[in-house]
View 1 (cartoon, rainbow, N blue to C red):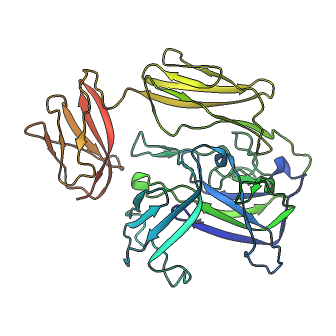
View 2 (cartoon, rainbow, N blue to C red):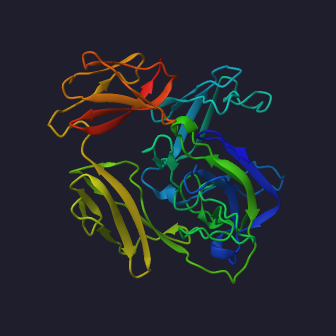
View 3 (tube, rainbow, N blue to C red):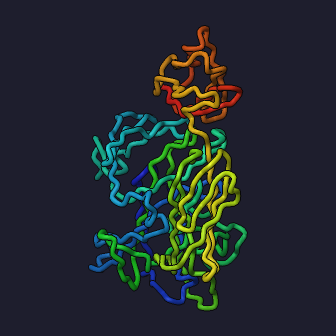
Length: 414
């Protein structure tokens, strides 16, 4: 098992033969990549392919991205660039980063991995010992941290490595069908060379490939688990078998990657894929399971009404395709049920204390670590709350207003 690290970390593999883009491969899948994804954890990695045009057996020709489902999402950043700075530590230490969107942050050290996080010179002599820049497509991570002790990272529909679990109970080598949600065949993530696009987003016709590059696609910390990092355990060439057939179309409701607020209007986006390529001419019908909480019109315009959980459905009757999306609607955090507005606990990041400008509104305050440990915060004046002596990291701060708990993220940097 090889861990690729945070965003941009990559692995290049080759075979002792070319992988053919064969029309008789099951579902069009030419090769399968296995990682350690499971039903609760997905750490997607973008896949690139290269044909050895100059026949020198080196990956020095042109890379082409295999455009998975997330490539077409409005949330994808196709030319994302990140620069990591060496903290010059002989043990695990936070690694600062900055990206080309103006964001800054850290790959935070954690107790599970004590080795230096920046690439070591003796293992990676070509990487600068001061800073390292990587470029690729950035996907939005689908993280559910409702329970900080049990964080869930949801998969993309298809087209990314370390995204789909391996089917360990299956004894053959037939691939999973990327166009169904069910786990079939070997599981893992199947790829069709016909998904290839060039740097200008144009489709590329390749009859085969010789090298595969797998690159972590998300830049995301997930509490006590550390950074999302794709893990790769193997790559398998798929053999032609015209007797294996199945669905080659898939309808996808694009995730919103956030909770909605009551009274909000948002446009839903769908993608219809045929053999992995966009085919958005079909008519899609929308519906919602509880119209007391939200409504949706024929164009996919969703109007939220009240707080609660809903399921939005999209379907195409002609092609017998459907997808659904579970959404959470909440009342705006800054407005309590008694009308008190802008309840803010500050500063954030915090060191020793957090404060509020509404001492009479807040009834109790507590913080919870990413491991699920909770501390009740005491205050003599209900304005200033002393933080416990805890380590640097990301916590959940919760406060009670009118017997209702509300939560926000809190960074503690003692």
